[in-house]
Image (cartoon, rainbow, N blue to C red; front, side, top):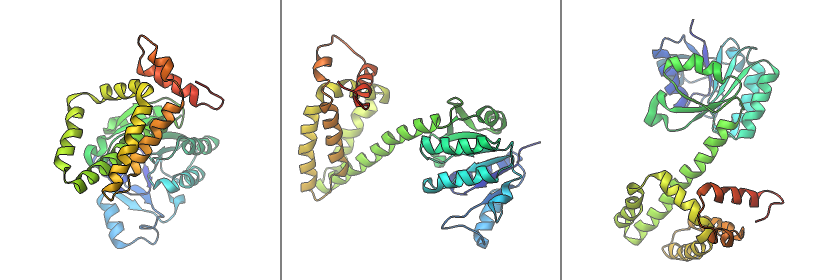
Length: 300
């Protein structure tokens, strides 16, 4: 018999998964929302939207207590209190699947609350956009409920990668991936807005994309890390000049200023002399040295 799947929150990701589960024959899925846009008493339009995805609205979080699986899909700002509230409301033996982009520490707090009541927990992280992947979006998951989650949902077509039983482990990877993906977005927007102001947008776009298209991203990342330890100070000076250039165009160089600061921080670790004298080293050696020097009490 298919599990009863409930949702707390019904944004883009929840709607995508609910529609997919309905197509796979899942029974009507209870949905509870208590956000700014949708909350009891729900509007007729929202109730129709929920029904169109094979689900049904409920007026209280307690109404999800009969669900076998509860998916928490709310905004990050409320993910922790909502997770704790679900842990208090769900029945023992249920499974809480937290797909929110909250911190590893917050995921662990929800997992602990679940464990105290005999509820399984899955730290599930969307490693892509549902607008691109649909319900097949890769899910990087950890937690004590992971094996059960895979057994229930892999047959329904979800793409699940296991990160082990520790809650928060998968969230840490998602969080740090976001540092790069969102950071690149912000850098591109800043650089190309400045290029537009300078009247060289097409040329700048070619200059940015050409080298990136020619090499794999993993090769590019390896090169950045290996050379940062040698050239961070010189690059910081260069970027401080770029800060002035972008400001002259009338744009606040938020990301460029942060880039210069990050490069200065690398240089301040004082590791250049050590690595310049080595016959060879890899990116892992640089990162290990950076991590050791960055720990409290650490030194280069």
